[in-house]
Length: 619
Image (cartoon, rainbow, N blue to C red):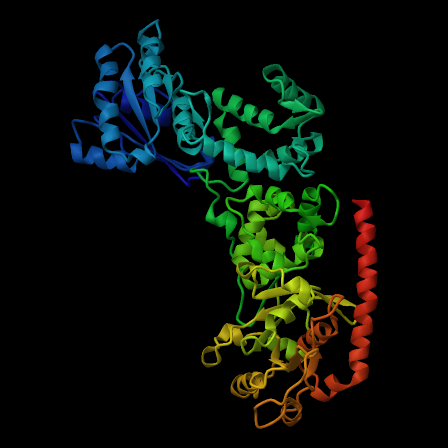
């Protein structure tokens, strides 16, 4: 909403422009009227809308045409004043003033106009019969007010309507010729309806209506008031109320009714509460609230954010199969202006046998977005209405900014839940297979993935000592000469080579020596495709000798060419190394260390699944 309002009064000489301003200020008719009143500013605390208001007079005798044009360009609303007892001043409204104003304003951002019939104390009849055809002819005219500067009739109302025309304009909302809401208004109100429909049943029940009312107007509706609202809709349309709840058609009808009855401020209050600006676009401030992320810190979703996302999942998982079908995903993102998830997402997170994103996969994708691009995550949560549903100042309340990694290293413990492992290796070494195996896909399932649907990321949960953590795997393109800071910034590194390709390990050795030999980032060498015949690597040292020389854990045999889903032990190890980078390699080699982590992972995975099934039964 605007921070101030500038009102310009124009019209023929002697129609009473200056008298209107002076009567408003002094609350009495002036004995002497100057040619032009000085610009006045009414403080916010004495205006109905709590917005500072500047009122500007125009005098043909004192000002040039150029000064008039400047004032027109600065005005937020223009009052064209005529005298109700002077036909010539009424004719000038259409023959001179409206064309002049339209010539001096941009077509796409026309200022609202208010017709002001002054000196109503001098006549017994109304000028509205003459004015109504003019109002119907020009869309920019918001309203017409008849008033009298002499007996103070409708003076305050005049300036209130002028303020209202700026702060709650009709133009973006309603088409008077068609007597219906404009498409952009319908689109915005439809999103608001869907966000407010907490159980996604297509109607707003009494609880949802009360929550909506409290959210927008800080007060619930009394039961009788709720019934009265629904009765108004019932009387005017057949399908506006269903199962004693308000349908989308009924919701849109109510807003049409508000506007037709001159209560635009009701609809504008709703739109602004849900983040919309005067052009019915979501504001940048709403979508992208300020969040400070110091260097070496990461971003994660907090507990409330996961609860909110779970409720969003529940409301769209119509068949209760713990996965989102393509239609359910489409329905979920109807409140977005575009589809945010492409087909690559299904190859980034866990899916069911039909290839649909599971509950775990859904939360994983949100975790990934928040980690990689927190601004995008804030935007998405904005579309879903997080700050409104959870009554927070902004989506920033859903985020946790982790502490600096150096402090984690010093304290030898971490509070983070998401760990990034960059996967490097020569082309064809098995990096993509390693990522997909983390999502439970064996080689046979991986071969079904289309080339243009491939993903360079894989994210899922692992358990380390009973703690659920997210491991994010990122496949780095094999460009040895140009590894960027992003390619190197991670919590653990996987160096993957193909045991059946004699030239595969050389890339891993060179990358390690150039970029990681002096780094504190834990590194693991993966001997991929271990089901194939192992050949001697064309490098001065064998992989085992290389690892021994550089005090690395021995190469980990790995294959995804199995009947069942590939083993997840290696991913638990990677997460453990990422969580405890300060631990000596000797500790990491210790078999009991890995046994404790793996057993913990298995136990908690089983417990976690059992708890999840119990939660589903409660849904």
